[in-house]
Image 1 (cartoon, rainbow, N blue to C red):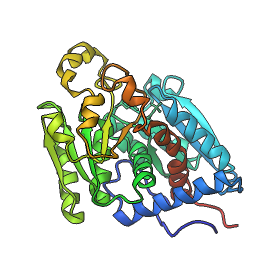
Image 2: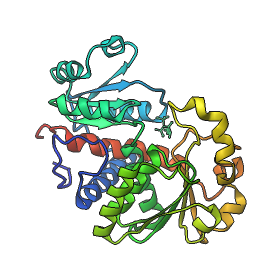
Image 3: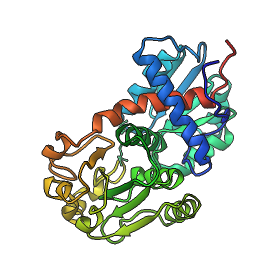
Length: 318
Ligand code: CP
Ligand code: NVA
């Protein structure tokens, strides 16, 4: 079998907190291998006959398309299940949804607002559950970001990432994966928007193991001075729409623009998980500029998710 030695069959992918550095590195290796196979037109139908149930309680472009196309390329099948159309939307308990779906599909992918609900789904499912974004985490995005950084710099350990803006789900997952992979991370956010205290705790504990540093800096200019990577995301995430107006004011000094990019290390890259709001968290000139790798990130969602799918599902022997 063409696979690398990652042995995470049956495991849920909810946060990366319960994965070792080695397991994450092996997923990146697997993603590289699958990316090469696709580019070389080599068949890699490792999930023939397998089905992935995809529950979406929120909108998506990249996640939906990349998971669905990924399953097709692997010879399997993906079912799009909108939260509103499932009985869960009419009050069926998540515990029952988990147990019923486990009788049909080989893995479940879910995008939901409530991370606690996704944890419950994972606990009650007999098949692996993959978190495709919750209010707290976006692990698939962080793995795609790590692959993109590795491609750009040829390494991960010792690089400095500065995340500018809102300490949200994307920032949380980036903190955890940075700490796991030995990258130093600076969170440049307004006071009280630095992110969840438990996530900070987990990231700090992990950083102690790998020698990475994770810090919070309020001043964005000071925060980017040693940055090899500047990362931002929307100021208002899905589910927080009511705060949109007040957030425009709170984050106005945190826009990633040409002046801020000029204060980073020479050769620094710009990253954003997308969708982006030009003129808010990032200017059009930075997003479209030479340092931007945002569409490489988007592409890499496909490759890392295929690595996850082929690692957590039982791959039939060839
Ligand atoms: N980055 C990301 O998850 O994009 P979508 O919301 O379009 O899936
Ligand atoms: N933080 C954003 C990410 C979207 C991919 C959100 O949750 O809306």
